[in-house]
Image (cartoon, rainbow, N blue to C red):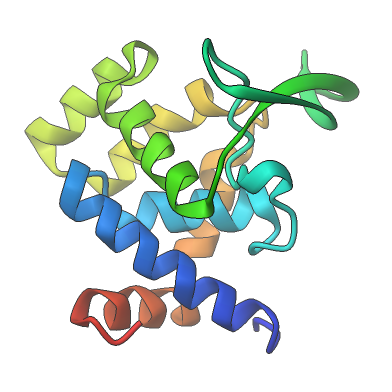
Length: 159
């Protein structure tokens, strides 16, 4: 059950994810689930980075502590992440990263062929995250009734 602080953030994320879905084709379910997991339901988005996107050429960079999985063990590290002007900019970059990024090309091509959301989650997870349970965590988030309701309302324009 989500808190009264999390619900409005979820509604805003679902709305932004649905707009990105219209622009890029990336299912809003993927975006919302990754947003929830990566940002703690919107509670932590330093530099408007909701997805833990690493710094890239030309971006504003920020150095932050993080937990990564290395050989199955959690390791604390300090890494350089991208900063964005707005959450909308972050959502757009995330969607384009998956739909146009070289690392995700095979996963995205498989999805375009099959339209299998579960297959996309399985294909993306080991590329996107070091957490071996990442795909299962995304699926758990998507199974939540509040998440499905937020996505349905956002798609109807009431989000």
